[in-house]
Length: 99
Image 1 (tube, rainbow, N blue to C red):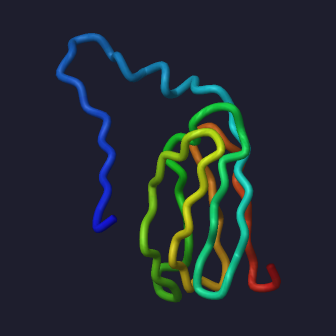
Image 2 (cartoon, rainbow, N blue to C red; image 1 turned 180 degrees about the vertical axis):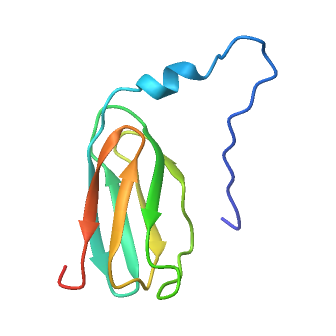
């Protein structure tokens, strides 16, 4: 895949996407490899807008702000020493230099 973009947009007068703010909870797990993070959605619902927060002066990310369906995983090139991975509907996970 060369590129993937996901946008939620509506011209409707009613806020049709407001239920996303009350999306069911999901559970993320993260594995660190040499030069990458692999993020797994272990929950029964979509992980909405998974965000990888790193020190921008000390890291490079291949991708960010993801939607992961239940059971889906994504491997992201990441050379950060530490990162906080979170989503709208999932608790954050911290990966430090020792992980």
